[in-house]
Length: 172
Image 1: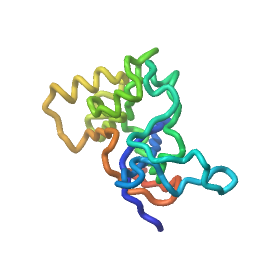
Image 2: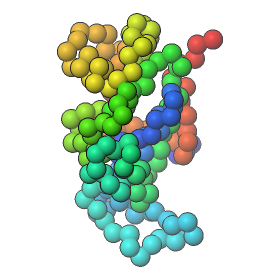
Image 3: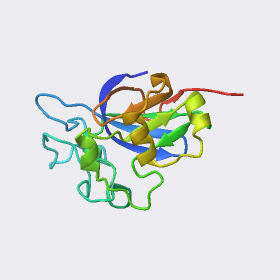
């Protein structure tokens, strides 16, 4: 299995599955994946080094209705986690009709892109599905740190092959 250390540069949440898109900044190419190939297997002429990563409309609010996934030429790998069905997976648009965030807000690392609430804490607050509740809870409460995991853009993750999965918890 091929392992690449990468940083989170984008994400998708579907139910209790979270896919992280991973990038890697190098001295020569910046954030661009110099090994990127188009659908025909060719290196495009337009592929150039970039000092940042981005996608379409990353400066538009709300991100969940406007922004695309990070452009393919920045992706080195992906990592998909499947979480216990009793756990709470929160992203900044959770519980909102229109969130006040754009994807560039995640790049600033002022807010997490995904919060995972585990164990007894998830059981106790299973009815709470708003990002604002959990973000305030995390900033202002004394809680068991093992029951909350926050993911931020540019956090390191290991990548396997595309769509590699990790079972975080199984409850029978």
